[in-house]
Length: 410
Image (cartoon, rainbow, N blue to C red; front, side, top):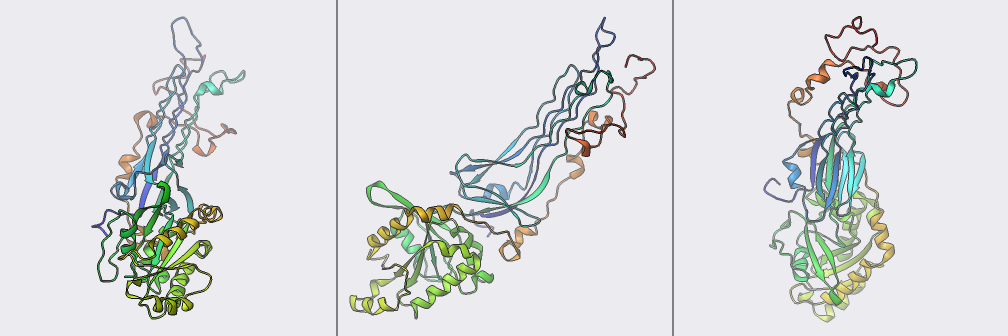
């Protein structure tokens, strides 16, 4: 849907900053013939941080920002001067964003609260300068640590809307009409299937200045869990809803059967959805009289509260709000919504256009090191840590023209 501003699935390439190299400098001053090592530490690389932003409702900004690279740490210098830390990159995302590994589909983390910060990729630690390695038996260490390398990862960000009530139904069941009747939202309404092409949110006013959020997703058809229609693309948005409101029109051939089909599709998508509170709303009841309603009532599915409504005349709307509010404020139901288990992305749950996206950038130009980093030879980065083995390391002097025979004190 390139013409739409609502983007709920995007693939991006992230890379944290690499740590700066430690310095192998020796103190030089007049009347100080043996100043000793004073090489400073390198700065750490920048982090990639995700931050929740309740003022955002789409991942559209990231659709045009595919490459997110943090700054590299600077190398240390003499006089125990530490290198500057790399610049962190903070990426604002809507609340309800879930992070997956693009290669494996594995669930990594989620951002659900405003101003919540998640360190997605950690910047590399800076290397230690040579003054850390001086000892009684090694007065002039000619080596320093390199900085830790950067971490590069392709990730998938998937938005799952945070709403209290999710509308579930077949196309033209009256979901958008209900949302426009109970809230200030103005979704597109027409008499053809799949009028709703993207999720819509509306705030429903209740008594005593209380309110709850209702989400309308595109209609579900039989086989949506297998990729038919638009339902599978947007079923993820009802995973965080506290209550599921099933809507079946009164002119349906078999209300109970349509309800069971919808329930089966949700179960195949995520069995955990069956643990949520469910309410059945029989819509378009303005065409029925009291006698027909009483005839239909015994045919409704058992164990599910049912309300007969008409979004046009307002019939049953107050009763529906009361039922929804009781379910939304049920503490056990809200806890089940928070503790949702996110399934790993498989082939059926991926968006092919995003999954096949190829990142193109000048890798050689970006990975080009500064002049100092090219000249210095440090120990292998695999030896970075507390236990460092310098026996097999190859070292050079800090200055290319420095001759060790001219400086026996070093």
